[in-house]
Length: 373
Image (cartoon, rainbow, N blue to C red; front, side):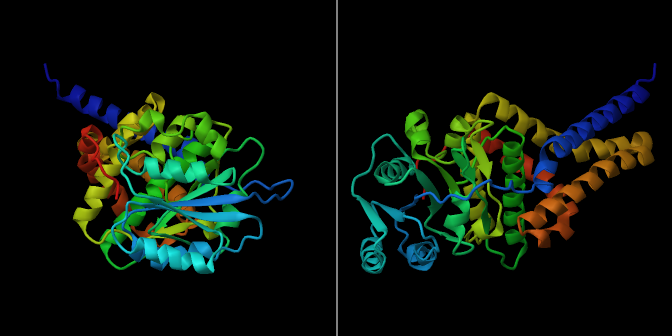
């Protein structure tokens, strides 16, 4: 009995199943960002805001980027809190100089390590605890807002019932293929967490550009449930507290934060491994949805290659439908996030994602590193 026809049919059926799963994600989730139009607010309201930055030995970044936050154009009460977390460099003196010119700059010096609480959750908790205002807006010391209206427009996303606002943390455009890979991966992550939020299933945010209410933080006992994990002060906290009704997104280009990308593949590898090591602590439904998408993407090309031997024109036709849908949604989403220059390479990036998943799957099972900077 010849079993080969049955083998090819099984492989082709698996290929079709994988494509159907991919099409489902693009139509149910990702099209939401591609077609997103910000809601029109019935009335405009400006909330007092506390911007919080945690910094450890980042005097060079504070000197370069903090002025962009201090000169925000915002008429309503606001403060800029910098938590100087046990820095050994010149941060203390630099912040004191800034304080002379900017009276709304508040400095919180930490001189002792928090035992058994790795990462930056303790300094961030101290910043939130001492914040004067209900709305807190988080960013990092190595980030700069895309405009002087970052603060104003991020808080505009708050409406009745909204307690969390997810922003876009982008990277500067620089020459080189690594820069494009980093920016594409950042776009692809944003495509997912923005789209999931729009679908009523928010699961993460990025600490480079994230806002939430103080009451939400303290009503959920802050980071107490994740204190043992070095990372997670942004994605794991949002994974815990975000709901269908309390989360909004803000993708106005004037609200982006920009960071300098890693310069070497080794540095980027280390950074991504650190980020993914926290993903295993997500809620089961989020792990399932994210895992199914990643698995279907990783299996797509191996199954396509084998399916070509079964019926090449049918396999390519089915793949072409998925590719066309992806191209349209990526094009519209990249334009919304000001990453349109990446789109001509979308097929290369799609192939890269196949490699990417296999490279970083081991990070899901590694023990997180015990420091954050």
